[in-house]
Image 1 (tube, rainbow, N blue to C red):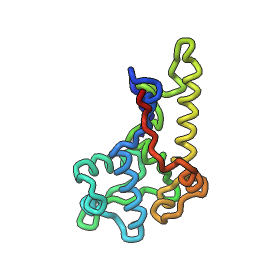
Image 2 (cartoon, rainbow, N blue to C red):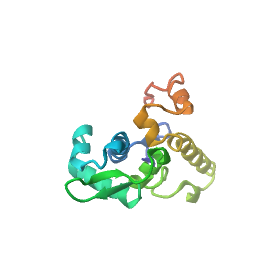
Image 3 (tube, helix red, strand yellow):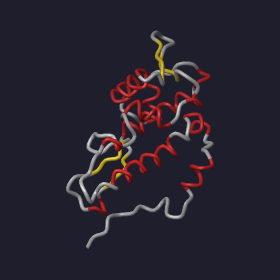
Image 4 (tube, helix red, strand yellow):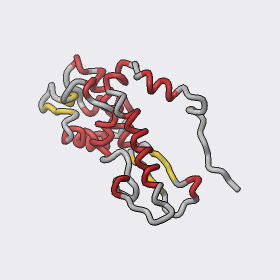
Length: 173
């Protein structure tokens, strides 16, 4: 997931927080592995089938997760993938960073490294605040929380805020 800023777009539609298919699939795969942790390693094919994820795409995601030490793999007939540590120790932010990199970037630059000419200087603080906001949710939710269906109270509160489920569209003049 990244905070993408669209160049040349009017200010009202300038910011979009997008969750990529890769990030979504990676988190879903981790949840499946957490739910099946007592059963031993799972084959990539079983994960792909259960979550309707293209197998080739999932294999690339699992490779990223393995490289980041979120999952481990085992060869052989009884082999497959499993979480490399307890699901309660892996946050959604960890998984997203493993497959996407930083949670927020502007033109592939981290918010703290962006410099704007006057009068736009305060915009950097807005992007940093957005990153803090993302972290407050994504670092609070573990894969164990998702696998058990028990989300932190702070997330439940945010998702039940009036307007949280309402899509806001750009205004048309």
